Length: 570
Image 1 (cartoon, rainbow, N blue to C red):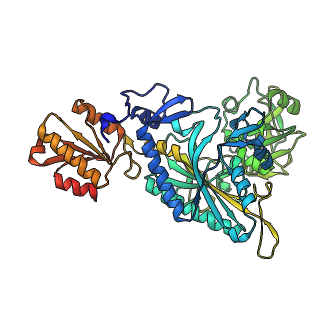
Image 2: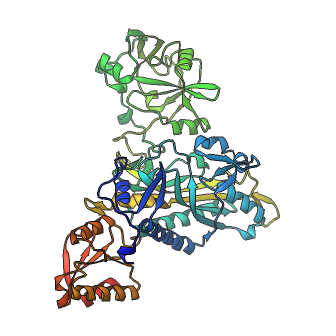
């Protein structure tokens, strides 16, 4: 490709609303353009990268026997009601009506559609197992699109679905797809870690792992052990419950066995304010949070230095939605404004975190305005009928899988996830088959997603420098950037054209910068675009010498033309 003909409008400066470095560089390099918040066009260079990513995904999935198909973006919402997800997705599900007022949704995922197809076409065990996949545009009405391609409303995704006769078959499919994912991300040049995760709105109770590209801009917190291979996202991570972790929280280092005592705490509404007023460590306090679950209200207790993990709480309760109660509900349940809730005398179910259950005594809200209560002993002063893991882990917690390890945090971008759905969809949507004995059985499903367009940003976040993008060879828009210093020089023009034709004939993807621009501008654009190899044809062309530079390295080699040809063909 000759760069004078390439539609690749580069920018000297990034737009002011581009916060993530990947968003800035993809805009500046002429890879993408914003149409609306969270909605992007892919210009030729960006589309070439996307196509290379897609090809790697296809190659690896085809190897394991997955079959590519393509399903509609518009989905009748009757299918979502049948599966029970219509209300779960809430406002993120983009709904519309046709001229007959039939409601449709723009698909954020395709479990319902693929289950419908398979249930209508497969009725015998002889046609199972089956793995199908597609690469297609998805739609989610994100509340706050940000970070460019990392959090969009329209995006490109690979979604695959497996159908098996039993859980053992699902385990095999899950393993096959997980191994394929590791190969895919390795070929893409991404540093990825698989972590335990929560299934979220996709559902299923058979287990799930997220594939996280390590990056500081990542929205997800990765929890890992500093000694073993344990890793999970923050929603799923657990800590080993030990005396060292929860401690023997005697206040002021004395053994206090007194009965509960009211203390005056005027205008105190937060843990931080209470800590400052009483000059205490927050681990000596108990936070009481009031939640609404539909028409019901519950209380959750965590230590003052911990945070409620709402995903764990929802999973424990077997519900798919909950929310913090409003101020009026809090006052109705506790008899006090927000900030003074405590567990004593509550007439609603109380769920207690393990760390709270191990406290000897604590300070709690007094359920009375401007008052807290000290010398409160869990189990003596309030019931602990339901004790479970309710909190987010914190750095330094003991690893649940080994005796020596401590948990540490890092940030990551979710680029893929694999789910064991089990019969979550097939049972509700009646996807069944006849086994060898002629008995009807429910299909067992898995689903497997990769954020194709998100990978562009994830790669750039991991592989860039102060000058621009550093694309891995496998997905770069071109393999070689050929730059003549001056096409007015006959020797340079002749060598440049010869190199261009010979490399192309050998199947090398070459971008020839034939623009009438100063060399400095050409070099800056080359660094910005990030093509892996740059060949510079300069004054030594008449002597048969040219420069070769790898984008990811600082040094430059001076080689003969034939040496460069051999190197680029190897």
